[in-house]
Length: 437
Image (cartoon, rainbow, N blue to C red; front, side, top):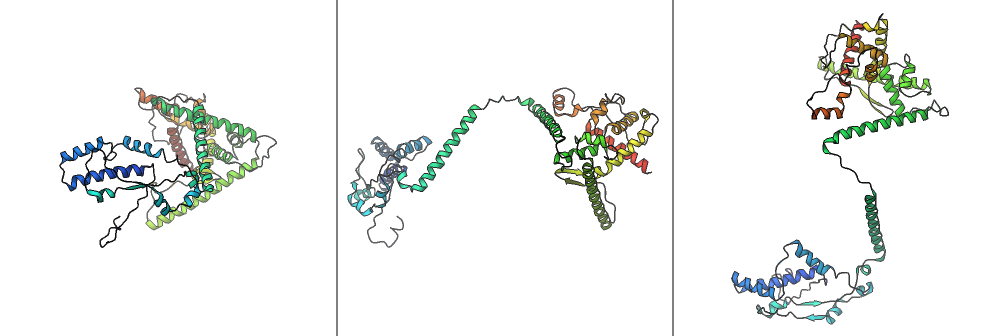
């Protein structure tokens, strides 16, 4: 409209605004028309606020709205009023294709703008002419407007959405109701569920191991990732398979598998660890030469690697564990009475909840030599060692920590598994230093 009336325009200008019948457009333009009429009357004649209110009231009494929709209810009412009729039309695509705008305008119904009842005319004929409109009837629905091939695709997509929504509602209705656990017990319940899953996984692994130990299976078949993990774990527990073959194979649940295959697998793991340790040693020496000073313990990194899907293996542990276990076995067996075994060079005291001294250090070493490194439960339950009241393995579980938080006792008793690992590593380092000297 602005371009049609640009400066310099001298010819008469006709503006056609196409509005879809019975839609929101018609409602909006009807409101705008009434609002413009009110605005023209009040501004052109300088009507006061009081007079404007009276005019507005008169227009409202005449049944013509002039205000904009100000709430969601107003907008909802307009949409319901106009949108409902959009799909009630009928006709065909051919009518739309053959539609001639000139012919339609010639034969169209003409509606003259009439003065609303109770409202005085103002502004003259020229002003009122700007609100004249022509009603053009085109009876078509969307099924006739949208191309047939696209319409079938749209309907199929809508049907799939409705089917999926219905299926989801049926599944949700048939699901058993879940009882919401109390907030205070959520952590304990999660821990209990985790233990149950671990126990289930362990049972499944035992069943799988029994299946794999079937005489019909080839004992020389390649080891699976789980079998490699169990074999390396048994190696870190007992040391070399050459010296403790039966215990390593039993603990790894690989009874019936080819022993040469197991030995070659471990030999490959150990050789990989040696190679990586050598590379790390060369790197450290190069850094020391560059900096002209020895690296601190903080600067040195643990050498971790993956092997056949088993993650984060410690190269130093794999190399050193057979040496430590062989040394420990030789030292303890060399004692006339193993009950008197002690490590007098262990000057670093252990500050635990229970009394812990040289005897406990000695029995811990004997227990590791007998049951394997990390077998804390077996060492605790061995009556010959007398360590039943010295281990607090259950104290550091998540559910026990929750109980301590609720009760008066806030600190867990020690030693737990973490403390035993640290003490065992310290005692082994002392014994290795003694042997090397």
